[in-house]
Image (cartoon, rainbow, N blue to C red; front, side, top):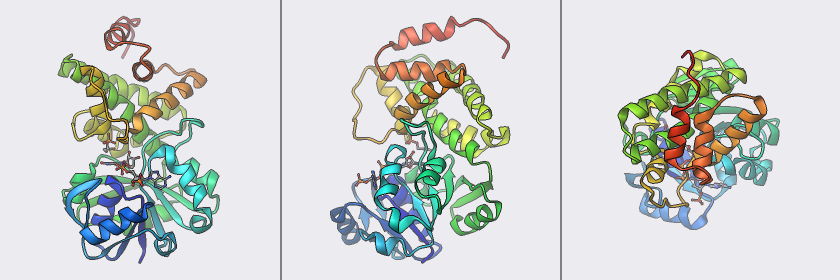
Length: 320
Ligand SMILES: NC(=O)C1=CN([C@@H]2O[C@H](COP(=O)(O)OP(=O)(O)OC[C@H]3O[C@@H](n4cnc5c(N)ncnc54)[C@H](OP(=O)(O)O)[C@@H]3O)[C@@H](O)[C@H]2O)C=CC1
Ligand SMILES: O=C(CO)COP(=O)(O)O
């Protein structure tokens, strides 16, 4: 067995299903009860209902079994990643660890690659990111993703090993660009959901996506990312998907804000914590990121959507 997936949420399960087409895969669930239920039902009824688990996919609660694989995909939310790595440092320290989360750590402003490097310095960190919904991948629909690893040889090897019949992987060594694209687009998806929920129209959304992309580039390029990465699957591609689909939980959180409705706090919405982390980082770096700041203020309920839109429209006129 070459590959295991830690985290049996929607995305981890979907990736494991797709990878199982290449050969045996282990999916690790932190709850023994959930692992047992999935093995019995051959379905992840909790997070990815309606998709059968293939025979080559084994679900386990044993991390000793899962870490027999050389490549470990970490399908754990960004804000939980550090704790998960610290809790299991002894078993993960020498593996190739491919983070599958999108976000920026709230207290440190770090992305997943830096969190892996800080926590487990002898592991090889990589990132799998790009426009993809768990249900699409699990149903075998065609999807293209970015595999980022600072080491060019590792990047090429991982690209080969993690490509499947329906997952086409592109590779890059620009880990900063890949992780910032995935983190920042979720903030813009919340903003787009909010304007659509409030009925402000498709034109307002297009404006937010475009000016949001300008903010994404502003921060990413200042942090050393390549413009080509931002224009690729992990940046522009994922922005386009997440800002336009009700499959996105970030977009749906925005919709609920725009409609003045409650949103289930148990749902994973990476953009909420990330908006706060990005706004703090932007302030520290003296970067102008008004949409990100508005999303943070909306989430903190210190600004109404009406006032947020009025403020954005009243900003000084400038060159594009
Ligand atoms: N869903 C999607 O379509 C996509 C998701 N992603 C990204 O994948 C990441 C995970 O999202 P997703 O799978 O959808 O989220 P889910 O909410 O469906 O699942 C999260 C999973 O993480 C597990 N988990 C939480 N904390 C820990 C911890 N400390 N240690 C171990 N496991 C933990 C949860 O376990 P438990 O059930 O026990 O709580 C659960 O299995 C996010 O960063 C998201 O942005 C990327 C692309 C697409
Ligand atoms: O990252 C995703 C699509 O690429 C999933 O989006 P959500 O986390 O908003 O559901």
